[in-house]
Length: 104
Image (cartoon, helix red, strand yellow):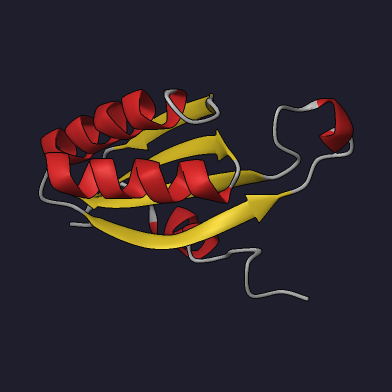
């Protein structure tokens, strides 16, 4: 059975690092690669870069990590959205491995 995955999108890289740190301190989780998105309306956002932090672990640990990450990121620049997948399907796992930070 796959580990649960928790995803939280925040404004900016600093908020992503703060969120990731808080999530890992709050629960027994690991961080998967960050992902980024620069939306078309970037100039109207508080920070023109959206970063997704992905946590892996047991369902309860992932929930605790996402909650802690949300509280921490809201102190920096804010949270856009969050979601937890308790048991990702194999095809979903393939998509979760994709990220935009290693692209030019």
